[in-house]
Image 1 (spheres, rainbow, N blue to C red):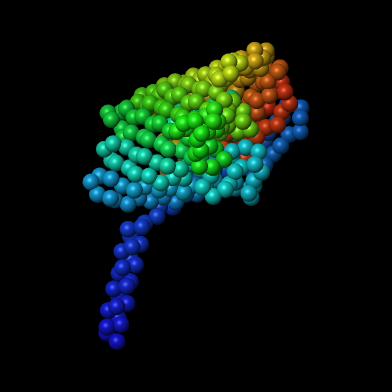
Image 2 (cartoon, rainbow, N blue to C red):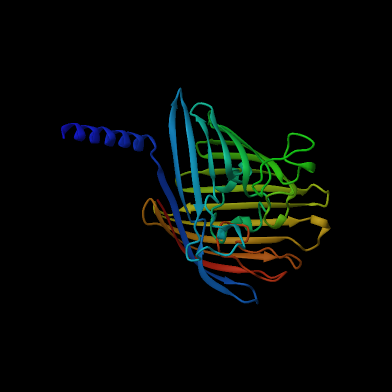
Length: 360
């Protein structure tokens, strides 16, 4: 009887040790809002928006010598929308739709990851948008076809060296197929459905600066829009306890020589107290694709944040997108939220949104 008890304790100890070594961190975010959209003469829409709400699982294993194995599985949740329609990125809820990868990490050098993940081009300025992951996101006008998350991706990211870091990704076929080649090492004939992305960042003290470049070949852009194009951007930010201000400039050029878009964004935040802040942004795009006339747009946004705790924030915002007479940009269409406007060409949609963000 005592031998059986000893065996049971030994088995329990083995399982407990294995569980400790294979610890899994569960994390996520619930970001929901009630969005009242005015489509400027069209049918208005009111409803619950889910703004990049997510749940994720991640872990690591110490391999010795400063090297670790890392992995992550992250999925999007369309809170209030069930599975959600597949109209925009914020509605897509498949398992592992967000950053999902496995790789190796060295504390002194950086990491190598394989899987599905945000491009360095996207990450370089995503945190500089004061209204990111809401319907007032500046992606209504910026990053179209390039502010993306890609399949079949290999990424190398350096460690931070005295404030400087860099990241580079190559991504192959976006339908999930394994790379094929008849003419070289790359994905397929004519380099279709592939691209690469690089970014350099400087983050030290109150200053942040970045420059990024990305090239897509008929690949990962939503609805194949701007998908055969090159993009570059530069940005600078300044942040202290009392306030923050950011500026971004971006140019996206068609590879077939049929023009480009040029856009810029300016945003700022003023902290009234440790819990309350006001913020505002302005975004402008000049569309020169196919020499189209009157096809630019401007976006305005103002907002108020109130922190109820370290993990929970209430917010309110108003935003308007002012289209030129031949433009049809939409609020939220290229963002990570489920709410979008559906205004007609030349109209100027606006939105009032009340929301809550809770991180866990």
